[in-house]
Length: 359
Image 1 (cartoon, rainbow, N blue to C red):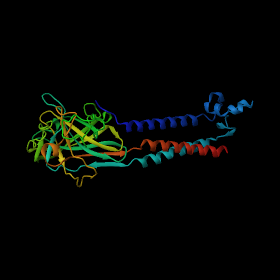
Image 2 (cartoon, rainbow, N blue to C red):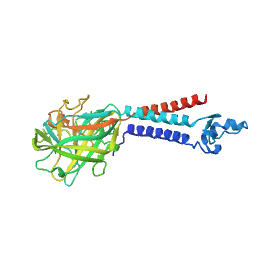
Image 3 (cartoon, one colour):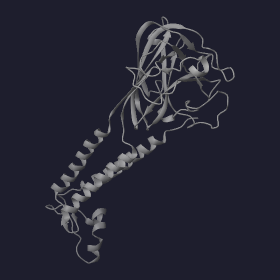
């Protein structure tokens, strides 16, 4: 089961409404000004001329040297062009001003822990690690990076697939009250992901480029299989590990659009041999990371625990708590109310111009 972000639907609906308004204005002002037309066939003139027609007077029609007439007064080509130019300039000035760059990062790996994040495969169950971020405005996310550990000697080509999911914070998209199989679900990822935000290389919705940062990188602890329901949630972790530090840069071929809210970022990596461990980052965040508040800790689950999650530091290792190393890049997008305000303002501007012309 998965869910779609309602804020995305509202934004797309307002974009669709503005597109319809734009299309209507285009049809209205694209009438041929140099040809005679049957006025009864022009809905705008037919509506405006009903009173004239009722009085027995001839309905004014555009001639070779005249423009469309409103209430008996001609609208010249120059006025039409001025209206269209005004609307176009307003759109091109207002829209870029509403789109600001967005960048978020938890910073570089700190070597404290590596946690498993992989899809299910032959003989292996799915295990997911997630860490949180906040968007203060509706945002279109175009790119992401995350840093993890490959087994020593593994080639970058051993990365067979990458999948990204985004989760709301519990209790959104979740059964509430929860199962009781974990100490708490407060501030955890939701039960299910946001369907519209899932991206996968196999599905063609993302592409990725791995880069080797360090051929010999060590972490002090790991969490791979010791992910248990309470009261056995504490294992202390599975000890240190050494491997290749790799950063995976992701481009979303279909950008992820999210409303202003608190979310969890969950990457999964499938290897042809071995497992990918997502590396921790400093908590609290330090430069070059971008601090935010409240900064929650990273969580983990596997198929045996789902839909619940455990806190990696507080529940499993009694260390940390931890962040995970990742970054997001994108641009803000207008909220539905902003789009509606822009469209209303443009229509009012055109109406005012026409009113002055026929006054």
